[in-house]
Image (cartoon, rainbow, N blue to C red; front, side):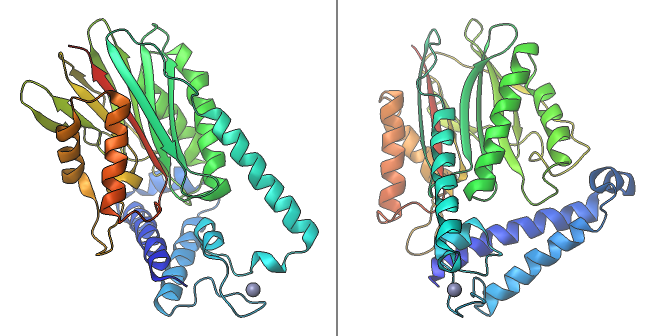
Length: 339
Ligand SMILES: [Zn+2]
């Protein structure tokens, strides 16, 4: 099994373990009761699966096939780190069904992403999304709030593959259903968290940056629910600031009170939203791309059109990673304020 795949899976498992352990250590008994309900052992079971998988990485038996005693295909393992049977051992009929479902999921998921940018007065918008596998867990969207202001969202479902893709689709449905009835990003996320906490049982969580943009006042009201901090370019200071987290990721805790922040843009300012596939891209020295390099790229290319800024960032990440294919899904939105 290729070392980098093991390292990626290990990093993701370490993160999962940390989230679960933190919850077990910090949540009150009441919170645990509410979160876990009748199935109080599910979190221990889940933690056990994570820990066993980490041990298997250490002794290099993760993905070991119980049928042929080889390793399952790496892309299969990345979709499901508990996989222990090669896809080859399925019958032709079973495989055909699996492949057909994957293809269908891919078509559905592509169709769900916005096909064109909304028209927002005084703003230039561009977006880019590329899944690392057939089906990704990244999501971005544009919609309108009740008062007609513009909604923008970028999100990242932990994990990859069909289950992440399905969660992404349900997130979109939830957002688009709720937004026309409210002007509050926090209210939407509180409701989505309530819905998810009982459905994803700590196996998955979702980081979301959800914002409302009012083109008249040029204010952006947002909740950053555990997502990578978006970069704000301030023309007056010629520097980049970060919109840091104001709430935990969705699906981690029942007690969820997101904080709402507001910023106001001036002429020539810009906003860059991205998923961790950008900042957590590795180079051959296993160094991460990181926020500082992203800020530098943004400063160097800030005079370009929004879509060209995204291309410049992609190019920068690709050069950094020595043009190897991207390990994670990559999604970005760039927004430039006229002036
Ligand atoms: Zn096998």
